[in-house]
Length: 406
Image (cartoon, rainbow, N blue to C red; front, side, top):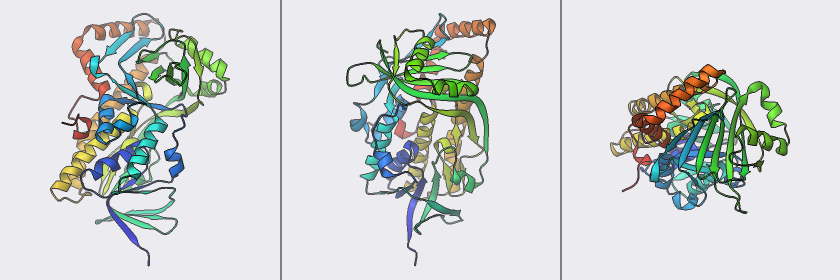
C-alpha cells in the first residue's frame, strides 16, 4: 500500500524564492515540503559562476529576518549609489540613499547554498530533492503530487515556484501573457582597474543597457563587478563567442574606461529576454510566486526582489490565516495575496518595459529628450525620493518580513 505524506504547504521549486517561502511559512507553525529535480550537491555548491543578484534593502532585511544575516553579511557588497547615464554623454543621474543604502549585491551560488543549508537544518521543512514528478492533481480538499519512485505527497496548498516553465501554473489553468524583447542578457563577472566605490552603474545604449554592479574585492584585493549586458538577439552569439580578452576590451570601451580595464574572470551565460505575466496568481488550492507568476526586463535588476516580495506577502497572509484556524488553501485568503501583489508586479513590469523602449530609441532628438528628462528628475526631490524608495523596495504596504525586527 502506497504511503501518503501530508503537509500544510507543498512548494514546487527549490530556488531562492521557493526556499525563502519555506523558511517564512514554518515561522507561522505551518508544515512545509519542497520538491525539486535539482540535486542537493548543486544547491550546496558555492563555487562562483559569474551570476549575482541585486537585493533591495528590504529583500536583504528579509533574509536577515529569516536567519541568514550572520551567514551572508561578509559576502554581500553594499550598493550605496546608483549612477544612470544615456550612453557616455554628460548628464548622468545619481541616486544616493544615504546611510540606509540602496541594497546589496550577492553571488547567486552563495545565496542558494545558504538558503538550502538553512532549510535543511529546519526540522519542520522536508526537502525532497533529485525528484522526478509524474503526476499532479488538485481537488476540493487537497493537492497531490506523485513521484516516479512511487512516493505520493499531499498538501492543503500547492505553491508554484518552478520558474517560467511552471507545471503548477498549467495545472491551475492560469494563462501566461508573454512577448519577446528580441534581446539577450549576457552575464559574467570582471575585475576592475579602479574601485567601483559601491556604485551600481547603468549605461543605456539603443541596443540595450550595460549594467556594472559592485561585488566585493577578490582574494587579491582587486575590485570586482557583475556584468549584465543587454544586446540584440542577432548579435548575442558574436558577443558570447569572443575570447575573454576581446570581450573585456569591448566592455572597457562600452563603459568609457572610467573604471579602467575590465578583465573577465567567470564564464559568460546568456538568456533570451521576455516579459511574462500570469493572468492570475492564485487558483483553488494553488498559488504562484516569483518567475512562475511574472518575469520582467532585467533593466532595473528587480526580478528576484519582486519574487521575494511575493514570498513576504504570501507568508503574511498564510500566517494570519493560521492564527485564525483557516485552511492554507482557502481561496478567499489566497485572493488577498493576489490583490496585494498583482498591482505591484504589473506596475514594475510596465515601468521596466517603458524604460527599455524609451532608451532604445536611436538618434539625437530622443537622446536630448532623455537627458532633459534626467536633469528634471535630478532637480525634483519628490521624484528622486520615489525612485529611491522603489529601488530600495520601501514603497507601498510592506509585509512584516520586509521590515526591521523590533
